[in-house]
Image (cartoon, rainbow, N blue to C red; front, top):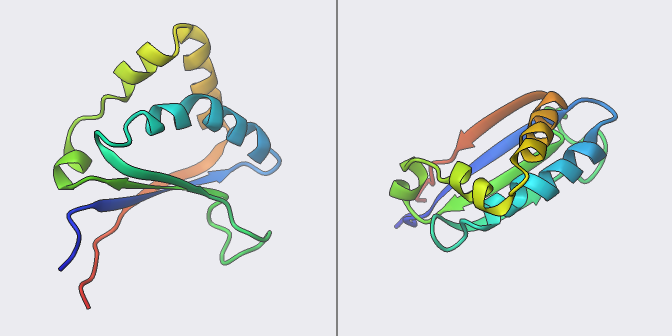
Length: 118
């Protein structure tokens, strides 16, 4: 029987030469907001890079796998804004850095996964 948990992969394709800056901004601003939701909304947050340059089709350069506790957690409205307000009192810097993080992307897409019971 499939688990009640639901996993979504979030893929990012960072512009050439900006991976380090993107990771720095993600680690500083977005990752803490995601981690704050573990236990309440998520069961896990995992991050990935391709092991080797040129792995696969190289459509992505960074991925985040979020496992939600259940379908309700996955489809409920996000509380990320409230969490970010509480975690980052300097909202001007936070918003500027988050905007910069997205300026570094060529593409971003989400892939909600459906477990197949074999």
